[in-house]
Amino acid sequence: MLAAVYIAGAAGLFANLLTSRGNATEPTSLTFLALWSVMLCLPIMRLPSLLILRRSGAVPILLMGLIGYLLLSSIWSTDPIKALTYSGVVAMNFLFATSLVGTLGAAGAIRLAGYVTIWLTIAGLALGLLSVPTAVYLDVHDRQNFLGISPLRGLSNHKITAAIYASYGALASLTLLRKWRWPAFSACVAMVVMAGSSTGLMALSVCLIFFCAFSITPARPTVRWGITAATVTSLMIGATIGSSFLFQALGRDPTLTGRTVLWEIGLRVWAERPFVGWGYVGFMDSARLRDFLNDYRSMANYDAPHFHSSYIQLLVEGGVPLLLGYLTLGLATLAQAFRFSIERPREGAFIAITITSILLLNFVSNTALRYNDFSSLFLMITVIALAEANRRSAVKEKAPGSQLGQQRLIARAEGPA
Image (cartoon, rainbow, N blue to C red; front, side, top):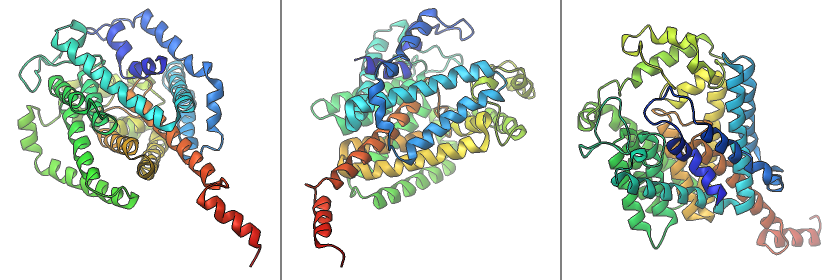
């Protein structure tokens, strides 16, 4: 139960209920900070389960290296205390993911993460339809959702994240549920529509396209890689050719509500420190960022929380090493997910499609290695879960009762040729 609450907190539940929804400059609720402090102690309470990190393989080691790099970046950060604090939260999230897999097992941890997205989405949609204030999104641009009414954010901290997590909930409904699959799926799709986020609609489309493609093809890694490459290429070509039509249909301007301007600013910021970046998180509150923003009339009075692109954000915060390390981590995890789907088709399909969606959405949203974000936590859970699944498979193969174990015993008995 506490593990589910922790995951829900990463998806924005605490921020939704315990912080101001109308004024981002107001101080963070002390209750919010106290609750998160308690939740971050959960991994420490389950220290024995952390032993699964032994012989965990190269991918978890890479993830630990990236987290260590975030911690190290506090040395050259514009705000060392903030960088160290929030990178420490990322480290605690990693320990939580490890303890979760150590307690529930690989498949159990993946299922719990999927179930939380479903529960949060359904509860948030219900509260939104009842016009509960905390579930309704206050849009500073006074935009409406796809139905022409006020957008919802459910139990998340923003309508974009609400729609993205609802998309993952829709995928979890199709892959992990049986009895209540279609009612849960319908509720998740309804939440995407009610949130009115183009990014969320993109996430839902990606999830459904890959789900249909994986459902009608063999679960072989080479086939999955081919489908992924072909689908991503087709999506990118289609988005490029039909961008004008898409903007008009979704009621969005060509700058994607200022995102393209932020991307340009972010690349300029990165160009000043291309190799190590400006340190984790701290730069976004610095006076130096204000200097960059003032160069653009549309951004002169805007307080940018991030650059609305994970890959640009990684470049700004950690330079080229952090971006390359994250891309390697994502692709390596995807490769393991494809292999895992042979043994566990339902959980394997869920994590493979979700990781693919995360890697694609990273171009237009900030969801990579964040300290309080479901997508970041899910990637950690997946990395540890797949490493544990691989370790257990290797143990089974070496066991005397397995087919491979029997072959080895016979070879030993026969001796050298």
